[in-house]
Length: 91
Image (cartoon, rainbow, N blue to C red; front, side, top):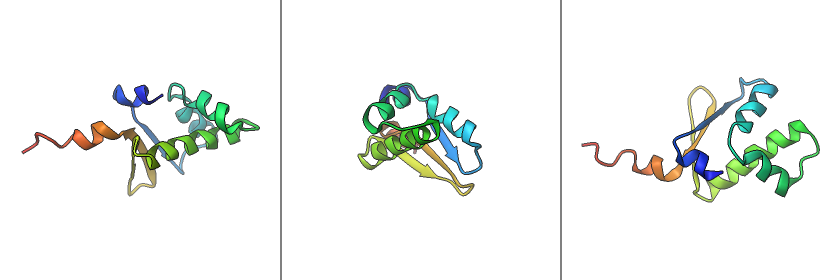
């Protein structure tokens, strides 16, 4: 699943998303749904979406993904290493 982020993809979530768009955005992350289902055993689709975001938050807390909150109320998840190195070389 981390390969999805390391290949340049990122995920942006916000309170303005409908439940269907929220679940669809989370489901676009390759392997995230399987990982959440395997370890958190959600009971329904809504709980599954929340479980997927919980996995992302855990990866952020473990410094495997970066998380950025914007002024618009959105939260973005990206590859941590790429985020850290993105400014190097810019003088």
